[in-house]
Image (cartoon, rainbow, N blue to C red):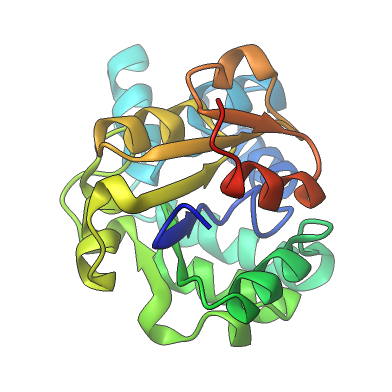
Length: 218
């Protein structure tokens, strides 16, 4: 293994949550008078923290979202997660093999700590991480595409940025990892490969990830 730490995004990489959360986000924004399609939500918000939603809505409409926007959205998402959420196919095997090889890994997500834990517990992945290996944009001042979250995760895990690999599925996440000085691998299950082309390697199945992490070629 060429890396001392593998940092996983959560939504869309560990858990198959993006279809659920973007469907609900589009519906919620539309209810509030900001017409948003599922495709709009994927394009504008996938991989970002909720503050980006507030910022873009204000920029585009001149109106602020209501103060209970985040709590209402989270309640809807958590209810849907408990009914529908599944782990990304093959990711549990990847984590177990990393553990067996003695390679540290963690999750660094734009989502809140509560959202990450609901997702990991619902899908049975929580025990493969544990409390000390979960990092959220709530821990830092700026979420992706700023590098702060990934740098915070690396520092907390005691690993230099250049010795880290990041696994991401969104352009914002790829930007953040590159800004942090880390290698990044793009999971293209939902995102067109062209939008993740700055990544060191691209893959469509989790079974391909270990090969990329051990390869010395771009």
